[in-house]
Length: 261
Image 1 (cartoon, rainbow, N blue to C red):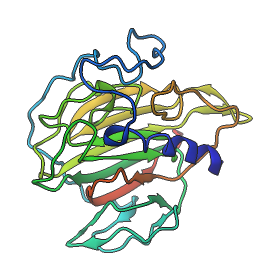
Image 2: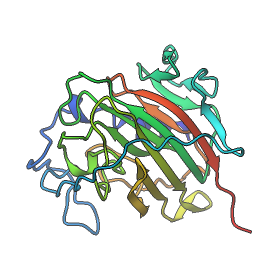
Image 3: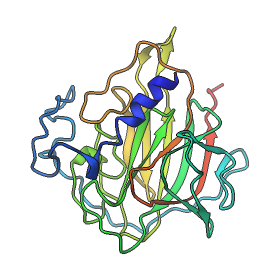
Image 4: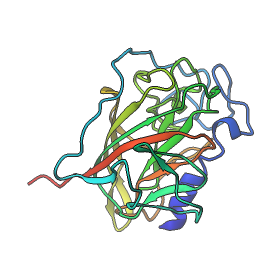
C-alpha cells in the first residue's frame, strides 16, 4: 500500500505557508463540507479551540514493554523514505529536515508518546514557520503546529486530526517550550481490505485531552474530503513530516495495543 500511504502524506505538504489557496481565520476556503458538520475542510469560520493553560510537556519514560523509536542518541528505528539524508541528531534530540522520516516497523493499534518543540525566535504565522505532523499508519495525521498565540483554521490547529476534527482545546505552550503528545490509535476494522468500522484516535496534548475517541472519516487529505480506500492496509509505519520548518523532537516510543482477552 505504498502508493496509498504517499498519497495521504504528500497531500499535506501543500498545507500552511506553502498553500496556494487563501486560508486562515475568517476565510471561506471553497472546500467540501465535512459530513455531519456545518463546516468545510479548513473552514476559517469554524470556532477557534479555547485555550487551556497547563504546565507543559508530560515527560514519560518508555515503559518496559515499549518499542523505543528515539532514545536521544540514535535514529536506527527510522528511514528517510524519500532517500534524503537522515535528520540530524544533537543534544538528545533531532531536527526535522528534508524528506519524510518513517519507522522501519509497521503498527496497528498503538499508544504513541512523542515530545516536540519549535525553536525560540523563529517567525511563525498561521501554518507557516512551526509546522509538522505525525502520521499513524502513514495515513492519519495528528497536526503538529506552534499554536500558542497563533490562530489558523481550526482543523489545522495543534492536536487536530488534520482536515477533519479540531482539538477540543488549545493546550500548546509558548514557542521554545517542549510539548508532548500521547496518542491512542485504533485502525479501522476491515473485511477483505474494505473498511467496516472507522479508525479512532484519542489525543492528549501536554496531558490535556484534545481528541476523545474521535472517529476518522478517512486518511488525511489537504483541501479534500477524506474517504477510505477500497483496499486498506492492516498495519503501517509511523511517519514524521518535514514541512520546511526545523521542528525538534525527543523521547519517542510506541506500545502496540493487544486485543483484549
